Image (cartoon, rainbow, N blue to C red; front, side, top):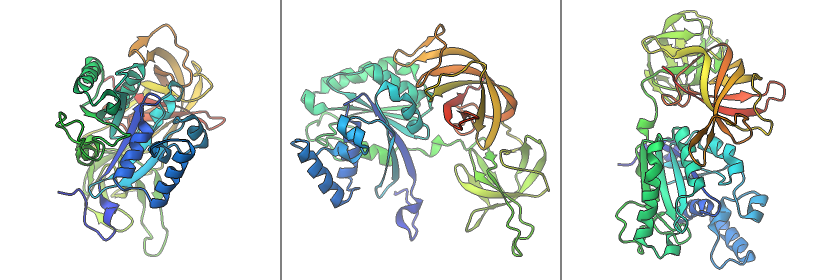
Length: 429
């Protein structure tokens, strides 16, 4: 049965899968994405002709599908991925957003950015080289970001003569450290992105493999359970006051539902005021709903006249978020200037901004060995560390493991407005 809802706009209401690709340099990430787009007929004829010409100019015997994603000139010249490249395509079953992220260690922050909203991570491994340090690093980041599904694509099987034992050896290597990862679901697929084996069409060279193709898995993997539908959270982004004759008394609170389900009549509590009320209406641009759920964007009205503004959070009265000014978090540092201990920063959590101080660095993570470093606490660009943060006023949150939306934040330089780092709150309760 198709995931598509029948409407006049065709693909508009199809389920959306966000996935990221990660692997070492030359593991074939860009080629894999190019193959997915090419074989699923998701690119235009003029694009095909352009990359065919570019491939000939580079002296390649075959069409270089990586050119479909290596969009920056510097990337094309070096043959590497530098920044996060987003690509969009659709099949009759599902819509997709791909984040093609860099493999180099100096671009760890880019991988964190690209993977932060993903449902699924594709980890590429070169069949000739097996599991290497970058494999550990990318797998750890996927685990840290609580990406629910990991697909390990063992690529370049054509270069090891499609040998089943090479595939099984790498699979065993990966599973030897998988218990250290906090991941619900891991799948393995032997592929050749260059030749197309098991990407969109089943491989005629690997009849020993009885699993699905990559595209089939992407189209059919169950992701509805990835959202938190238990803990109802609604950060207020904007207060709607039309002040028109038709909607003279309308006062709606607009935003995206970051968790759970809201219904008309639900008893709610507003933070930070702690005042209570009931949901009166739930509106979208075109209709009024009886029920709304994450990640829908809606406008909510309530029965009582309560002062609510941007940055406040609405939750159901029987299931409340945590409240604290002392936050323990894992942080990925993005900026060239290192983290300053006792430094003052702006912390943006959902729609709320609050000043904070980084009180302590507990340890840095060696993401190439999955070991904690308690001695070196200087946090520089691309480092990942556990920190203790004190906020100027309480924030209302859930642990990141429980809710990726209400459990995450970014740190901002108050002077330059630069984003300095991204954090994942550890629930100590």
